[in-house]
Length: 353
Image 1 (cartoon, rainbow, N blue to C red):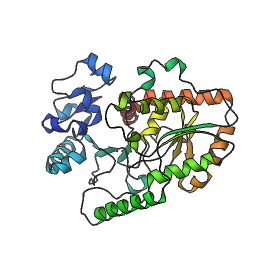
Image 2 (cartoon, helix red, strand yellow):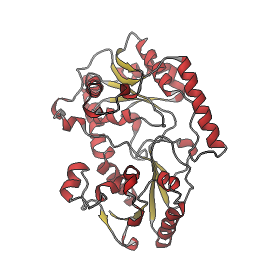
Image 3 (cartoon, rainbow, N blue to C red):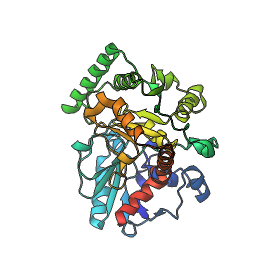
Image 4 (spheres, rainbow, N blue to C red):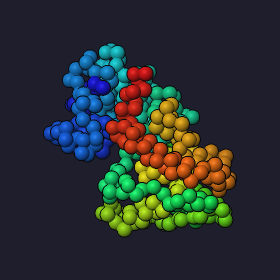
């Protein structure tokens, strides 16, 4: 696919706000193709950069909408959108981070995002995965990653923050209410968030799973995000415990965090495990071509009280061979469609169908 982006928009001081697909092509001096393939698996053969918008198939806003809002450069973004409209080109934009900023709807703009609420947004919004690194390849585990042998009782893992304190849940809800109020009355630029104490929700769901004698739970509960580790996270013992917990499990509970999405969801697929996906009206990537209910234990909002029953029902329908096959398919789904190159190649393919 040939893409165009206005190079003057790039701000090196906000590298984290660069549109994900452009990161392999923008870094001070350009990457070489070899460097792109090593870091991102993306080359100029996959995505060609045009200097003229008329030669491109799509125009990309180089920075997140959050950036244009924060730096008070909305007119700059709008000028690019108007230029693309005059040229008859679609525009790709994205909203970064946990909390979505308010972005106007434009007919020819597709907005990629991690969080947000599907029922509150139009068809021009598209879910985008969290692009996680490949732990299996990095640690040469690809030949041994498949889960433990089939067991009558499903092995359910979780390693992360979950706080059963109702007092802390009350404090979290007060903060959420204040955030919601400021959004509604226009005191900040962020969209309203659902009033949910997410750490308490995780703890409650984990307890329901633990209460079932038919489920083998393998839970490591943290009182803080990443156990409070802020430096050297990639090599810290708690990170090793996190991935070892997945390797020892067949299923992993995945619940939204501060934003309405779960990083753990994509890590679970990357590790070739089966997410227990607690649906909270969030966006899932490629939902028009991926039948997500064939890859996860789907827990609808009204089914949270029956989470153990849902897991057991799902597990009972799998044979030993079926369990391993699904784990393989989940790993393949991640590798082929939820990595940086795989996701945007899939999006491009859907545009040409």
